Image (cartoon, rainbow, N blue to C red):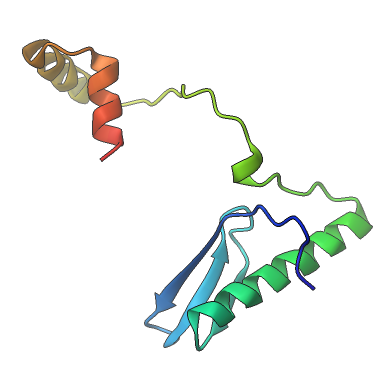
Length: 109
């Protein structure tokens, strides 16, 4: 079984340890599926997620909202050491751009 409207965030990567592809789902970090092909890993993890969601519905457990369906404000707070804050403030002043713009540019790299 595969979910009808599946908006979850999947990733397939190679596992050198297992010598197979591993399918992962960001919203369900404890789940994975190994397969010989990337396509098989994706299909497998999608089936696992569908099964888990079916079980969660039966037990009344809250089902994670897909990341793709969430709304983001574009704002979040990040804490850094005072030394890092000072270095960024100096770089901001020297380049003539705001500290916010400098931090956003560094994070987007």
